[in-house]
Image (cartoon, rainbow, N blue to C red; front, top):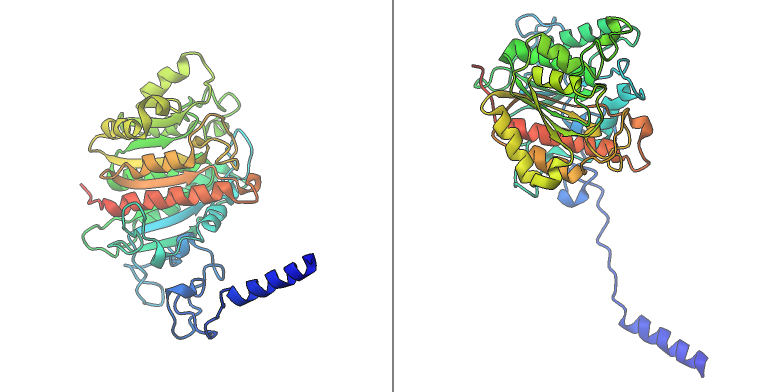
Length: 385
């Protein structure tokens, strides 16, 4: 009896089951072979997200550091023009914690492969930064020696100078802006020198778990002058060089300082106010955004994001993790809320992919941060003074 019921049930299931009909096979996948639902057409292998050279968000690669004469290559052809450029800074020999950030640029680019310029319309704004007035390119990595920090930073200084001197695609905004993919945080010093040369002093919005304004005499300088230039002193040095305004601000700070009062006093001398990580609990993202905007006012702004501003649960792949940080969503909400600021330069640094999870948690977060920084630049074009 039980056997008969089973046979009857199977027969009924077969007779009422939905027929599954597959459409005829298509061999042509249109312009984006990774996304056949976009459309059909002739075979096109010119754009492949997981083949060929990996650039940030699959934007075009440009050899930005080639020698030019009056905007032309040695063969007389016109050099590519661009408005916003990604530049890798593979440098990690000035860290006080775990090394590995020299592989950050490649890791961040890997995390950005899912971003396709033709299909990057924001669900929040309805905008697509890659389909805007700005021509966006990836300049690859600056060639930096790993044997001498002084020489490496001079190389990075020169790379910034060359790129910042390139012609833009937009005649209305003649200075290209650069987003650096780091690299340890020392690389921000070269970026600030570059922005100063083109834009004058800037206010720095510094997302980090550490203040990074330590006096070189306190951090590293006791060993040698050479050691005093590192990822914890670069903002102090930037202040000494007159690169930054006294309207700068940290966000997400939670790491301890070396001296009970001296480090905070020195931080104030360097022109910074502090928003701690736990201030988010008191003021919310809206309050933090307003604090940052109020602090920098109408000045030109450089935004530097150390990925360790995030809690290690969201960004484990970094050299000096500090617990109690922000979530990825909170950080992105705050950055996206900085609309209207004249952002003349930016970076995402301290990404060390070797410590990441199998799910690439950190590099995915870093790529999205870089994408948000790009969006701020696109939303607010900047003219020189």
